[in-house]
Length: 399
Image 1: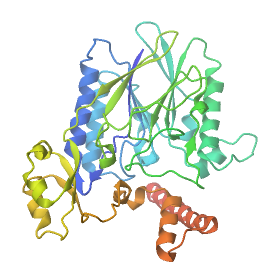
Image 2: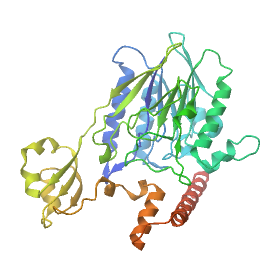
Image 3: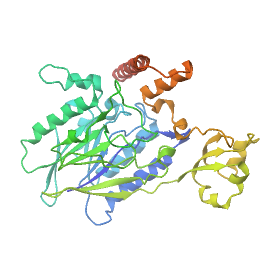
Image 4: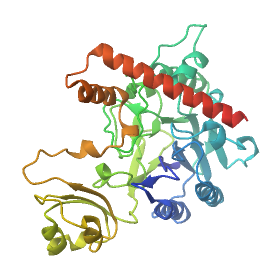
């Protein structure tokens, strides 16, 4: 049985105000080609998309059309199993799930966690694929509670409860290999600047051992391909996003994962690199150096982040930079000798952890370090605002 694991398409996303629609269409075309024409001749039995199909709950029309085109094309060749992520509207993404043909399976409702997609490989291997859509803690700690006791308010508790239900169902399926699709932040994995924080009460991580007893956990949420620590006998992997979404990812090799599950024995995972439609680069120096250095020719067609170090900010800075780097996205002026702000200074406020954001804000206003009480008050207000927005979105969807 061969699966193709991908995640975090974020259709509709922009990069510092620049549309990524054509770039996203390019990488999805590559994924379709990998299924249509397998490089080693082994067919792909299912494509797994582990959440964050869209970048926001109400995506642009062109993004919906691109997803529809991709689903239609892939389902002509294989089964496609999709779960919702924290950026998706689960209701919108899952609309029509009951009407789709068998080759398109949308798992966006918490009630579907222990209802697997059962696949039979040409070599006799049977696989049960379970989907865990992104779990809103405040809802899931009630919905997944056992015996009326509400679960602790953490992602570890709710994802653990979901996996417990999956293991209960799996116990009655002898000789079946198991795959779980989950959208979560597993402890030990490395985030980048382009993921939205899912922290609740300061707790956003789950242990990789939560997937104990599962042959393969196909993860989404983090944009860099990586393999967090897992329980013995389980393989836990992030495919990462197929496209770079921030300059913190400029050196990442983007990929999808080919996952081979034999009838018995270890799971084999093979990354397949996805060529990027446009490279990314960060350059630094005086304006004259940036405009004249022949070594920078290789970056002229890249998305570029530029730091200019002239003592005085040059006139017409952006126009002069774009004359050589037409795809420049960020420009900073940091005179030589000034303390550098570092990459962290370029992180969008909406993508920062609320505790970190609150601490920085309080320190900026008071000129003193924030106390735990002040941070807790800030986080409480932040979570109340997020909950109010979630309720407003839900009311809009019902309407």
